[in-house]
Image (tube, rainbow, N blue to C red; front, side):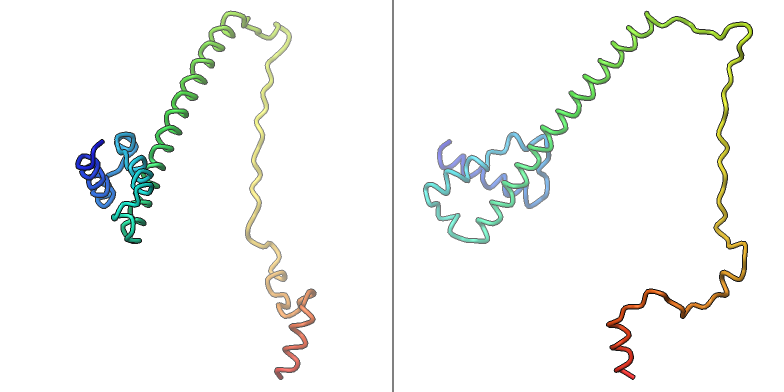
Length: 151
């Protein structure tokens, strides 16, 4: 690109960045990352101001992160589609080979349900609650020395 369209694109990218309108959909159309390298090679006057340079760097980092997120999202969609296709394919094969295994006449199908036992959170013995709170078996020796000297 020549200087004028490059400058317009540069300003458009920074405007999108300032308005927080960079998305994973438009991140692939923004070429600020490519322009930044050429601007650094040419020692562009815009890159001498640290505030501008940091803004450009932050905008390119955001563009790059949205590109990475877009690729990650696409990979997850493909992996989900592949696993779903594999499950349906595997399900069709399993349905063809499965025979109904009903229990014989003398056998009964036994299914047991496990009972959940609730554990009480309330102490059943009130003496546990009325115990001596000051009796602590594991007191720090350093703390004891400091407490004794503090008086």
